[in-house]
Image (cartoon, rainbow, N blue to C red; front, side):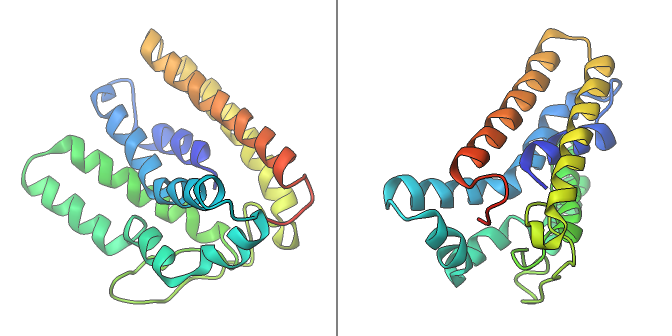
Length: 195
């Protein structure tokens, strides 16, 4: 899933009007697992000037980058963080780690050959789903539009649930990011091209 989809899904499932004090933690927990990917892409594309093809067919799969991604997508590490937070009474951190956990679960069925080692550092096993959220060779041309529809519907539900100006600004930012992301994808990779 794309990052905004994780944000919307996590806020829908874990957030609520009554527990709105945890919404920022949920938002951050939905974003953090993808943050290393943004740093990787920024470094490779804008600092090193690496071509898109090399970024996504070679450098992405380098073991050091994979380990960096896996730290933030490790179910055991996320569970440990959640359990420690729970026993310390830090409910904001519990919500944060629950959101990270939900993010990782959402990625499992939607990565064909580019997923994470979700049991890092205890195992290098990777689930290669038959479905991809982006790759048209693995139903990405079906999943991507369904995800876009789900994000828009989810944002509408969140706008009805949260009436405060800050909440609505955040939801607006999520929608704007999603539109900008897809614009960048279309310009950079083309609709039917592979990463």
